[in-house]
Image 1 (tube, rainbow, N blue to C red):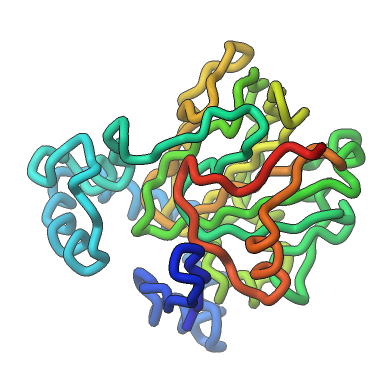
Image 2: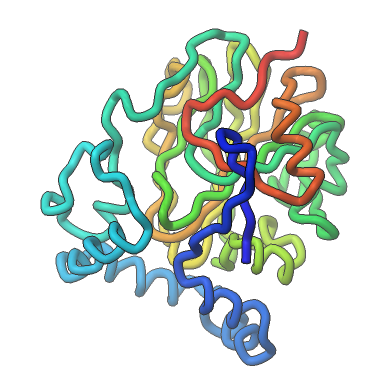
Length: 296
């Protein structure tokens, strides 16, 4: 059972996990772990399932998914019957007014929908993955020079579940450099997996880029793939000006994670989010929602 903090109600909610029993078995039982290591984490498994989700035959999964996870289709640009595949539904675009964005340059907004954890004053050699498990930023990026610049900074981990809106966005005006791709495995990014796979983010397929923002300095954007996320699509154009709230890219089917790193002294995350992270709880947020402000 995974509990998520709801900022609006000031209470905790139990997350409705897609394939929850399967994930618990895959990462919590000896047999499940063995099968995960031999097959599930491999590219072929994800590639095969991902290809199926691109076919017209996968459309039949959409109505049940909407019903089971109470997906609000009123904010989708397309109606359920207009999607051409399950992946087309999964990466659905939202209406213009679905995710209001505070344009105040001092305000930091969430890059996407999901469950947020925030860590301040990070040690680049011991960035927290989940309580009790850490990883090195230079292992994540495979670039020690860049990693060294973020010691003492802030790390935001936004976990996207299969039920979430799966497009991610820029948190400020600025220019994003070319994305660097790192091949890896396809472990689930569910907390159950994070508790059982050391340095999971450093093992999974991922892409990262530096976003030169106008108000929060150079931000590292990391997109981490997961089981059944065979493709990370970057839709932004490198070196071209980007606006706050503009789409950066999207994940195809599966749970995924976006990680942001800020340099020391650039941002102050809302106290409520940091406190919940320290207690071991993720905070539910929506794209464009205020999550912090520029440091004074």
